Figure 1 (spheres, rainbow, N blue to C red):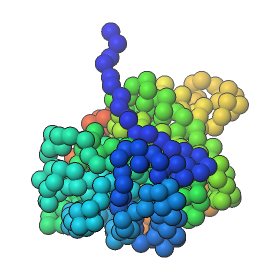
Figure 2: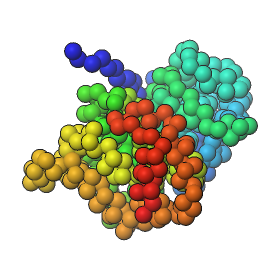
Figure 3: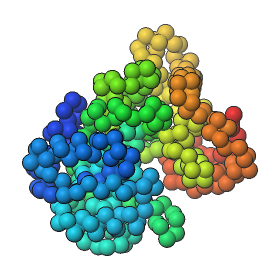
Figure 4: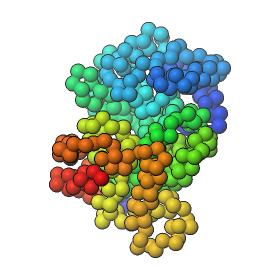
Length: 394
């Protein structure tokens, strides 16, 4: 009997050259007349916020204001301040320009702007969002998180310090813009880390317990785009076509994992990032091949299939079928070596500056309670998690 599955992603993509110039008419078509533009100080300093505001104004949709006071780890207090300003300015829509923190903040602001409340945590439970929210357009400036096509926002509760997830189909943006101009200036070290985040999204989506034929197709195409573009972009960072390929790969991976979930790489990465305050993409890069090797007995056939999008048809055909799963893991390790040589993206805990081995037990204890563990094809107990962390040490 065929297994039941569903797939959901109603976000409209505006992609390619001059995609930004299409945003005003698309937003206006959703009823937007007075958008608030959210970004962070780093993105604003590059001039991208001004570029976007000018493009919207030329499209007869001027922004009410640009708000750039969004930290890397956004909080409930930040969201509530922005929502208050949104109301004061009589805004009716939101545009998010930035990375994952800005996009998650915009989703959370949209909760308060649309539901009418003042305290974000009032909407953190299941079923708290009961109707469609205000128009939200997302313009990513990194290619990695996939937040433009996910139904989740994670915001820190300033009182307790814990990160609170908000999950609802209503959180999905109506529009997402993939314009290569927006990532051309991204430093190569951040480009590499965020691309490996997207690569991990795609691979774990393809290997997980909740995978389905639609998420599989998206994940495989995401792997192909990222594996092709990332090594080339290291020597040609201004190449718009390569930048667009990375952005497309990130979005495709986001569509895949938001429907099929992620696994053990993310469980370990979430925990390492939380305990040692390391960037998420770095953590994904660090654990990916170690976890693939651990999972291999349960996912050997899928690993073998991943070799084709990773290395291309010629090398795939030249590799004997029984060697393809191992060759996939080797290809990931080779890509990581390339990134280490080019931008010093750490491959091990030691290279990442985690010098205290006693932290491994704490990271293990956090990981074993991470929800991503539920979707990994191979179970891992406390001892096995500690062994994986030891293998990732050096």
